[in-house]
Image (cartoon, rainbow, N blue to C red; front, side, top):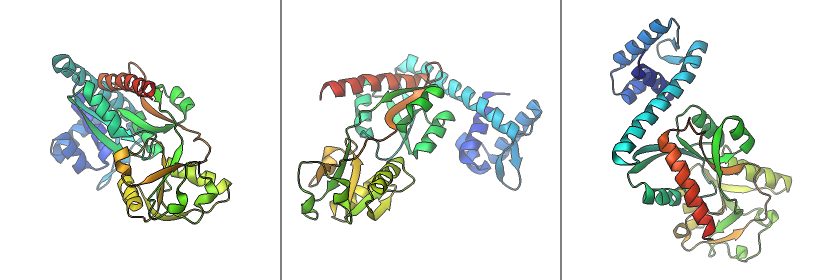
Length: 303
């Protein structure tokens, strides 16, 4: 058994396809298949359900895969640590993020780049449930989203909570002059107004739907998408109004737009930056997490 075989196994889990897993592993498909069959032969176990195509992992394969994720994560962390010893903190950090979290991710990453200019980022947009699974399976190094803190403690994750500044309604004053004001809007004031909202699979949308339903207010969703870019464009042209966590949108994105607080109960889940516990987190993700803590502390102190 060698580390490449375990990397191939993890790539196959991610890609769910032999050809794509081979491309991700920078080998030919026959080479990948042969190396995985050799691994099965050495272990004396069938790991992969094979038909004409990849058909998932066997029960034994899932058990081996959980170890493979851990070993590959440690191996990659070791490589990054060696590189950081040679050249300072550098490499590519894999970040999983849910849409419409309580902070602007690019603003945070800009703060990180001032300290670690050689660090690069690969960002995946996931649902809250997908994010927790990605953290568990080590397919992302850092998670930024909404979590139940008790669950994170049980799963041995480090979490740095993000400040909850409430929820705001973003609108174009030319198209929705009736929303102008300074006091928080009541839920009922949004009845029948066209809204641009994230899809119902997203945690923030489910949170909104729940509270509007309890208030017996029917939402008129004119635009529904997973793309925050499309949502803000819908607001810019006056198609509808956006409901968003305060702090999610950069001020420059609000050019010509107004916002007003929404009177709504806080979310039950906590917005947070999350990495594995000390010793399990890769050196790169631990460096990032420690710097995020420092940066957030300075940001809060500056308010």
